[in-house]
Amino acid sequence: MKTEEEADLEEEPSQENGVIQTTQYSSISPPASPGGPEEPSTYFEEKVPIPEDVTRMFSFRKLWAFTGPGFLMSIAYLDPGNIESDLQSGAKAGFKLLWVLLGATIIGLLLQRLAARLGVVTGMHLAEVCNREYPVVPRILLWLMVELAIIGSDMQEVIGCAIAFNLLSVGRIPLWAGVLITIIDTFVFLFLDKYGLRKLEAFFGFLITIMAVSFGYEYVLVSPDQGQLLKGMFMPYCEGCGPLQLEQAVGIVGAVIMPHNIYLHSALVKSRQIDRGNKKEVKEANKYYFIESTIALFISFLINVFVVAVFAEAFYSKTNNEVNAICNGTDIPYENLFPNNNDSLQVDIYKGGVVLGCFFGPAALYIWAIGILAAGQSSTMTGTYSGQFVMEGFLNLRWSRFARVLLTRSIAITPTLLVAIFQDVQHLTGMNDFLNVLQSMQLPFALIPILTFTSLPSIMNDFANGLGWKIGGGVVILVVCAINMYFVIVYVTTLNSVLLYVLAALLSISYLCFVGYLAWHCLIALGVSCLDVGSRVRLGLPGHTDAYLLNDMDNDVVEEGTHYRGGH
Image (tube, rainbow, N blue to C red; front, side, top):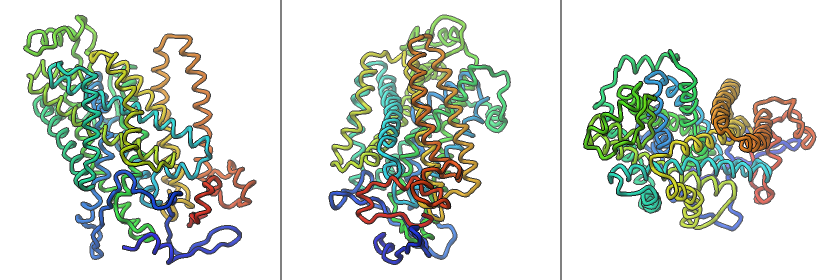
């Protein structure tokens, strides 16, 4: 394969009227390190070679070589927050919301496709592109918003691991001790890539297998009604549903589509040897990455269905009195965990494991805990990678690998440890609701930039979004953001505090202004030329509405000779 430097030498662009013209396909050069040779970025100590196979339209050898990033990305669809959303969906609505889970997963796949294409075509991940394209203040605000999302997700993941340790030890390991254990073993596992990138990816595959076996065991044990399952999956209707089920449906979308995962996937695809100056190789990489992502998300969807179906079959319409009576009559050492009333059963990942043990025996409880531990451990590791990619990209950090891991872990772990010390394991539902709202609010800060940049020919060349993807992507992002904003509004209205209402109103004004700024840039990228005032005034290029964002490239990058080639 040709190196990027060789590809660049083969094609020098000419300029006409200040606009760079090209006659062949060319790639975007990633930013050079200002301090000389750049230290290999996290996860990219090595790059996986792609076997040559010019005789076939499809090659399983090539698919295998590209397999890895999509499965790491899919772990975000299996984190403890998603598992909790699944079991609550089953307990509150039965099988009736499975079609929402299916739709959210398909939407997630389409958004992950955009993220992967950005990384493959440009050789930069989303945080790096944001760093180059947005002015300083929006760039810093964007970084802070994404960091908040990562912290919120990481708190759920680490506490999920701590809950698993608590269940496996029958309460002997308190929540704070489980958090400390998770911090230590995450540091250990993160350095597995020192033994080879493929070994690290295989380890993640092993954790996904543990989840599939654990939750699959619960599925077989409970034996859900297959007819009701298929009906709930393919009939987009929720008979007899009320506000409780509507909120749960919104919660499913918010749990599945996570902002930091867009940043993560755009970075993970850089781990393969792809000549970005070769249009055929780029097109081929996009194809295999999409196939791999489809397979990975299909497996994650099945695992999520296992959890929903188990709780839909066994605990839908159950009351606290019914569950309490059964649990108090078993050897499971969790008496009086549920109140003595006829309210509908309320479960989370902790109480979910307990009720499985009460109804189906201790083995069901321990196997459930093993599955939660695998989900929490794998998602904590990928969350740490997300934090490193985001920090490196937005802040252009060139620290040692250990320093990067230590900083990103400390930012996320400190609030988690405080929660674990001062919060009881049985009363974490309120905190999880808050964290879900926090992540829902950050969605625009991943979805709007990814649609913006993948729609610009000056960045994506021939792989820029077509009209169908622009319209479809815009509609999908609008719907997803609207759904999540509804979730936020519902949560805020339950606070019952005038002071909190006022604070929420003030924050909302700032929040909507920033989202509006990003949406303005996005609409320019989508071709709404009437908004492209900045480009016309500053560039004098009325025919190039996509050029506006490119005005904000860092001066040091320009001086190093890094430039965009293609449509700009």
